[in-house]
Length: 393
Image (cartoon, rainbow, N blue to C red):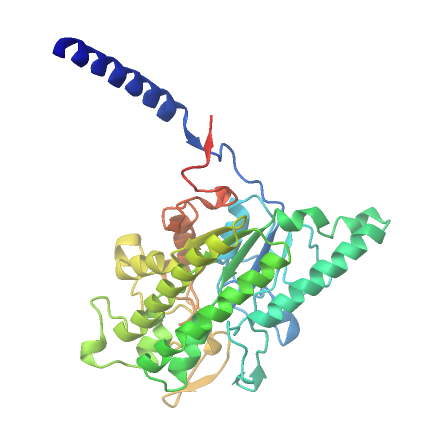
């Protein structure tokens, strides 16, 4: 009797093993091919501004853009930004700024990012007599107007040459919505002489407004989001040079520890917020991208990756990005200019705040494959669900 029972049990186990083998052998996430995004709509600050502030206020001065066709490109870098490498990865053209409308095609998306922008609405913040009012809420208003007007025009226009410059209305729900913003919210607090503790107390409100912005885009038809966290602000030469920390506030790399801790708290709350929104916006795809880890890894191991001093800058002086491109500046009673170095590919920092093309390319190579994303999907598959119960046979 015992032997018969044992034999029966073994048979059942054998059947279960066979079934599980078939199940796992045929199971795969429902993402057998890339997403083929028809367009990108980007929101952010100078880390992804491709010409907004340059079009509205004044051109970004040369040598910014020196490796981008040898002319100023509206970008605060010697060449391409991470958003440019995203476009390349997805097989799309480089993004045109929404505000740079002369001879511009928006067939494959538009860039609303603007230098100086914050998640929080500004209190008429000014920098060298130039006001940057294009905070995230304004960028969302611009997008809403852009979508409404181009959708209406697309149905009315007969000229095919004009029609080819407009987004196809159905593509808005299929597009990738990228967001890289928040650094200036922290930056403004630190430069306003707030303590790290005071800046950190402002983070919940910033994240709440970020959440509202994502929901507004969702209501406008956005479904697929690729959202960068904020980088290690305490490693920017601007702060390391001009806001020298106490000895016990310097980490092993030489960065300002307390500033980076605030950035990490911002990132933690951002990740938690996106997790909450996934349960609320059930048909949206929200990818959290850990840019902080990629950038800190590069800075902390600069020489290992072929870069020089991570706190050096290629263009300008004293960590101040507005000195890049200026001529005949007086520094310690000596006349210097704001020209760039001859070897930007060896620098991480372009101007004390922004990154070189070489650094941007290095970071892009670490984040676009999905290894630093939650869920862990490459950008080309960001439209797919990562729900393990969503099976395909």
